[in-house]
Length: 204
Image 1 (cartoon, rainbow, N blue to C red):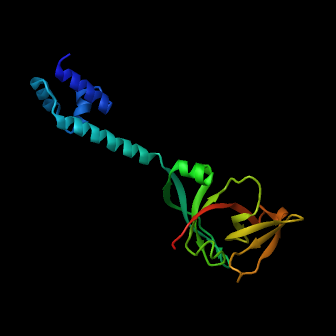
Image 2: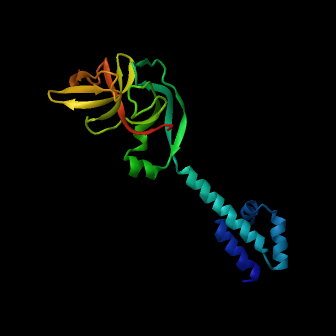
Image 3: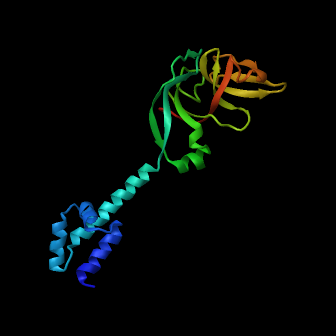
């Protein structure tokens, strides 16, 4: 095998191509230029550098494409007196790393979505305008922060389990009085649990 053929084989392996037409596209040269290299029996060093850069760019793009896109809804769960939510339209998608979602948050990307907090009743835990990640699929009801629908209002509140099937609905801001609901009424026509808040992002 000639020097040219040896070098061409290396370029094919580096760029994961098998045809001159494919290789010329990656190197951004014409097929006739590659034929000129054959006549010289040598491929310029710049071609190998181009191949390495091109493959690196492809790898970086593939890495970006592995991100999970979570739905972000332009609606707010009120952390105040409760805002009436009539339209729930998905606005766009926000990307997260799958490994971070799995290991740090411990959720299945298919079960979570993003929305905003409105009001100050969950301050300082959640500020007005905070973005929250809500997990629709949670195992059993336990103490924590949840998004719930109550009398057509979408609320974000801390729930505390009490004896006798009673749930205490708490605002972290002590200016708001807690109230109670019966666990039997959950997921009915008046009260529905949307999901558990598993992460928040907010301005300092």
